[in-house]
Amino acid sequence: MSTPCRILILGAGSAIAQGYARARAVRGASFVLVGLNATRLAAIADDLRACGAQGTEVVTADLADLAGIETRAAELRASFGEPDEVLIAYGELGDQVESERDLDAARRAIDVNFTSVALWVLALLKNRPPQVPLAIAAIGSVAGDRGRASNFVYGSAKGGLDRFLEGLAQKHAGTPVHVLTVKPGFVDSPMTDGLAKGPLFASPETVGAAIARAVEKRRRVVYVPWFWWGIMTIIRHLPWVVFRRLRI
Ligand SMILES: NC(=O)c1ccc[n+]([C@@H]2O[C@H](COP(=O)([O-])OP(=O)(O)OC[C@H]3O[C@@H](n4cnc5c(N)ncnc54)[C@H](OP(=O)(O)O)[C@@H]3O)[C@@H](O)[C@H]2O)c1
Image (cartoon, rainbow, N blue to C red; front, side):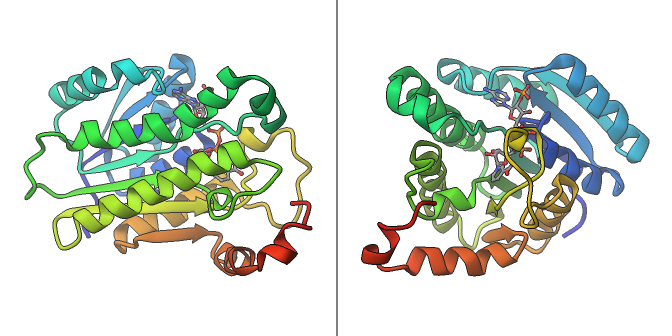
């Protein structure tokens, strides 16, 4: 695939999204960067232009504002044209203990990581001519592959996103609309600031570059780094009598 001209990034402040955008910028793409923090987005836009981006536009928005998604998506499409590629990168790890105690926190984790992402995808595809190519890449997580005691609210939101994207990909199989689900393992980004880092952690640049390659190769699902495919295959297939005893 040739490098797409117009890339829309939802959650452009994400460290992983920045790694991806740099890999695309060196090939002359242009960007619409959407996120919460205008100052950070402006700095990212400067960086991307220095890397070779043809153009950058910055839009601030709370992407998890469910009521505003359809209007926002229509405004973005009208203002900047139809994107060739969309990366949905925003997300929140949330706090499992707090989510079990405070249902507003649980709802927020589900809305940010699943509901809003699904609605954004539907809004971006609504009334889009089916023959116009589009690559949609959304960042899920290995946490969505099996429900675990330590993070099943976040994990189930990512798992729901996985099913949503799978169905969407099947709907568009054989058409110019391509859907990629990205499943990172541990990434050394601001999201994991509070966690002790170990050898399984990858850099956001590595993960971002892997996403760019996976989009180009029209992959359906990509685990990044690749070894998480093996780890999660084992975890998914552990019998319940074993799994229920694990503290993971
Ligand atoms: N880091 C990991 O270990 C890991 C592992 C698996 C999957 N992932 C997924 O990878 C994606 C990117 O995360 P990351 O590692 O790059 O972490 P990150 O740098 O913390 O990026 C997360 C981004 O999401 C943005 N965001 C959160 N809620 C938003 C909202 N309502 N509207 C707009 N933007 C919002 C944050 O903006 P602010 O910073 O301005 O709040 C931040 O820029 C996420 O979907 C995450 O779930 C991460």
